[in-house]
Image (cartoon, rainbow, N blue to C red; front, side, top):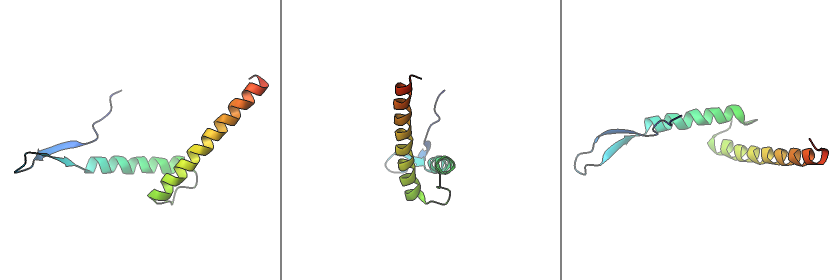
Length: 79
């Protein structure tokens, strides 16, 4: 599956010849991903962006710890 372009190219800027880049699609993408994170991470429904990212990092650490424990249990019990 191909990824969609993150930025869209607008009209040329007068003088320099550089291209203007529309930020709107990027902002929508970031907001959409933040909404998805709020659905996945526990107790993050009312969190601001900083708290959401902090809780996400904590949640990732917890999940990694759970995976480690389950792997060790499976080697002990031979499952």
